[in-house]
Length: 202
Figure (cartoon, rainbow, N blue to C red):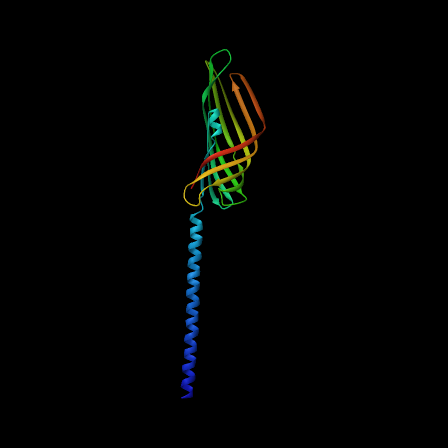
């Protein structure tokens, strides 16, 4: 009789222990699920794409658009496209027709936030093609530009598509070779670079 009571007591203790283990496992399961959902929600809120254009360059006839995509929290890659087509008047009558094209990749290293948001160091190597004509005369130029900018990108709004803003400054390394008939000239140097761009992030 005493042995049966001891056995029953052990069985009850085992049931209590198993019940506690089950509750503990269920609690861990709920915690893991909540953590996974939280991480998933955080991942979904990471807006990795930013499209920008420079409104100030439009004053001079340039259309300048830039794309950045966050591939890591601290790294964004993309590209830049610049286009000009127009003309200017010259002293003594007549005019000059101009066209220019610039294209190249961009790489941004981000120190704060999640790329493409936050403080970043941006490099944009660009190949340039320029042509000009006036009457029967024409000239052309090819070159290379390498802006290095310290900039800050914002995407306003908590979720979905948001208003984008990017401001910054730095320097540009330039090398250009131009020719008109049998005359050619090459220019290289360093110039300041400023950035003010608007766009959308998503």
